[in-house]
Each structure stands twice: as C-alpha cells, then as structure tokens.
Image 1 (cartoon, rainbow, N blue to C red):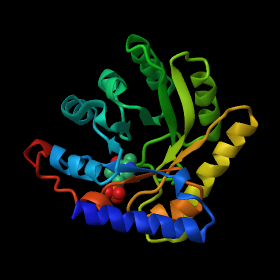
Image 2: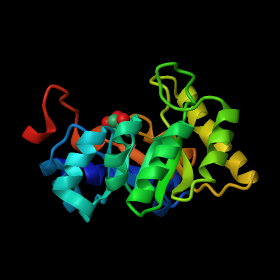
Image 3: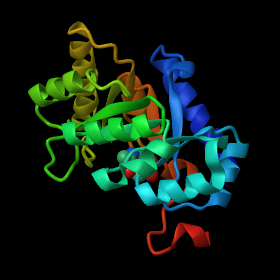
Image 4: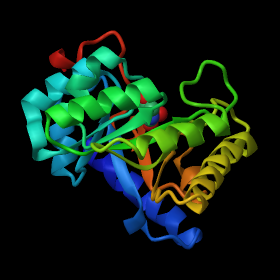
Length: 233
Ligand SMILES: *Cc1c(COP(=O)(O)O)cnc(C)c1O
C-alpha cells in the first residue's frame, strides 16, 4: 500500500513538474510520518523515501532513538523552547522557527551539539488566526536579520501552510506570497534557497508556485488514526 502510494505520488509530482517546466530534482519529498510507526517509516524508506517529517518533539526524539541517522529528519511542528534540545539532536532541518527567542534557543542547543542547525522561518500567509507563524513582513525581516547574527544557525528558506479551503485561488495566493517574500529577502542580501510548501491536498499548486520541499503525509501513509499510539502500530 505505501509502496504503491509512493509510486503514484512520484508519478503525479513528475507530471506537474513536466507541465510547469520544472525539474523534479529541485523538489525534495518529505514524508510526514507523524502518528505512524517504525514499520511504516521503514517501508517508505525501502521504497526510496529518505526524508521524514515529524511535528512533535518527543515523537521525533523517540523515533530518532530507534532509527537514527539512517534517514534524514525534519521538524515541522510548533516548537516549545524547553523541547528544542530533542529536536536539534535529531533534525537536519527545522521548518517552524517563528520567534527570536526560539532562534536563540536553537542556536544555544546547536552549540552544545557542535552543529550548525539549518532552519526555515514559518510564515503565516493565510490570514487565519489559528495558524502558526509570523504574519508581519517587518517581523520576518527582523527575525531573518537576527538569525544571521547567530553562529550556529543557518537560515536557508521559508515555510508556510496554506489555508484549509476549497478555494484554489486562496491557496495559490498563500504560496505566491511566500515565494515573493523569499525574493524580497534575497534582494536585501539574504541567500534563501528553500520554499517548504505543499501538503497532500495542495502539493500540485505548491509545485506550480515554486515549492522546493513538499511535506506529504496522507498521500503516502494513508489517513492518520489519532486514537492510536504510534508505538503500537
Ligand atoms: C501533518 C502535516 C503535513 C502533512 O499533511 P498531509 O495532509 O497528511 O499531507 C504537512 N505539514 C505540516 C506542518 C503538518 O503538520
């Protein structure tokens, strides 16, 4: 089932790339494995998936302890300062940095782990109050400036979640906004290469709008069962 899902998804990504004049080599597929167990992750890995995304610090820590650096880990969820230590140990990229305090704590833990931590800034492009991320452009510039003063943090791009809506134009607008913001920052001297955008429901639009990292769960693993503990799967 997972093997077939991956095959189908890769073909679909390729088709959108072909239609929009992009190379699929520029797009990293991150399998969002939250709520899924080691068996599912292993099966995806055996079918060519190298990158996995988790949205809870302890879940990432525990899965990292079981699987380790055999795969590449991404942290994509809301991050509390007291849990940064687990995430920095495991994650090659943290997608969800949204405050100076958080960036400082990541830097501190990165120093302890003797690594330079790649990060993305999470931008709230959807104007939905419930969504995480920084909304004001001025704030984003400030945060980006601040990150460039941190020795063990490297800012490489931006992340967003599109609004939950059937209105395709709103989803597209959200992705376009993120791309424009990246271009603007780069004009100011930053060197951002990554746009983390696109999930199961909206990855085609994200590819068309320049995504370099897709975060896809359901289309790979099937629906999540929130009543189950991943350790029992
Ligand atoms: C769960 C999650 C995803 C994947 O969602 P699907 O709809 O299952 O593809 C992507 N990004 C973030 C931040 C998530 O929390």
